[in-house]
Length: 258
Image (cartoon, rainbow, N blue to C red):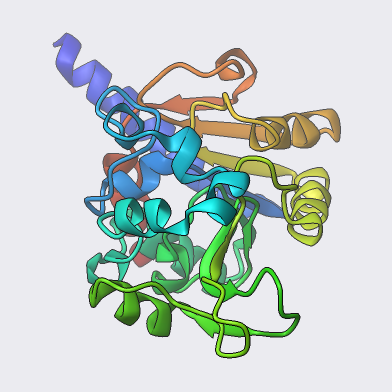
């Protein structure tokens, strides 16, 4: 009997969540690595995260990159330059559909895997930068897109500037670099405008992303958290779930019925 009651309560929570999304005037999502683990991409800081196997302090250090970019390209090849082989998860796809139907106004992500775009989202704010562009640290205006750079990395080489020969850097924010100012400004603005923020797959421990839900709360909005680990804002969430896949399967079903 208790299992049946728990199931019914869960269904009520799913319906409440969907109603909140439908009735929101300006819903925004904030996503972290947990969203992409459903696509087979390992997170960085989790129990089995990539940081346990590699020296991330060097790989993503801007000073070290300028001295020896080969470390980044040799290590990142296995988890950044194979993302073209990964497919968007149910979360990516449903978030894309929510935007297309006008329910979701913006998506703020800590991820650098481009899967939100692949899942159909258009208004994606990448606050940790993106590998979609590689550029020369010396020659202004020299750009290479992800597909070109990935093809070079797959050959065991590094993308280089055609003008000066310097190895190109991805537009991911490395340690020692400032976050992209335009993206950060947009993220703060969207968070403050949001009357509902979906906090998905992030334990809210890394700044400045962890501040975004507080902007929403301080502006009178509500937050919903879906994460399999505790976060500092759990007590401030209107709803809390721990299974991203299950939640978004339910939202997908409710969207189909609406």
